[in-house]
Length: 358
Image 1: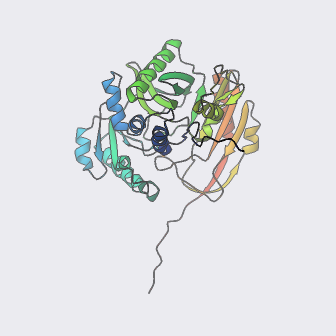
Image 2: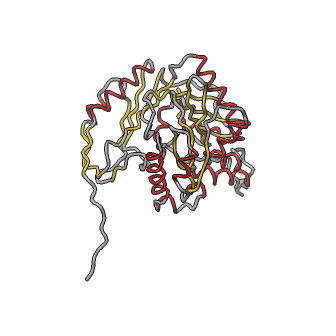
């Protein structure tokens, strides 16, 4: 006679922003430890999360949100320049545009509206995709923190430097390097601010990916997602006996190891920026790039014949370069050298015309 099997799942994992909503509701219904639906909803709304940070006494830019059908000139009159316009619910810098005056504000507003009207976004019927956040531009260096929450306690897995300046008008991320090269005092300030921020949002159990900026006024939280670092970038975090993906799954079922030692002294990833808009015809120089010292892998994820769309409209990168080595400076240098070998041939995309009859 077969033993009875408990049909309830042991854990739950979400690896993309929109799936965190469903995961939180499922976890609540199944009584599985995970971030609450309320906390996940806060993470996915840039306006409400800013308000939560302000209530917690954290540095936060002046901000407000308006519907995408609002009067852009009236919204511009409320803004303090320079400012940044961004969709409330999108991620990976999609639709994020800096404006330095009224004219660039209006252009950015209309451009974001066109992005949010794309069928691929409208199909989700998400209220967060029908509004635009306007906030004061925060100067400074940008960082990312990868962590995991267990019963309300944050465990830091990595702190990434973003060595390329992200000053706009678009904010295409390129290189992540860990460990951070910042002074210990700055790193401690980032971690402490992140601990306060996750408490302000109510995140309690599961992975988190946080983005922040640092300047002379301190640490400014940009956003926190209730998920691990996105896509193939997760490969940049490897431990001696486990990958980040395995770690997240083990944590979900209550078996996360205590001893986590990085597999390399330093590691980095480059999200290859789209070199232009059009149809990808060919990619050359990949083998030369792979032969660069400290490069561990190169993944060209864009397919030949695929249409490349740069930010702010684009939603993906054409590929990724990974490096591991003795120190952060060496792996960053390796990424840049490898990237210099890559040559993308892009054809102009012709506009689609409706057929004419008669």
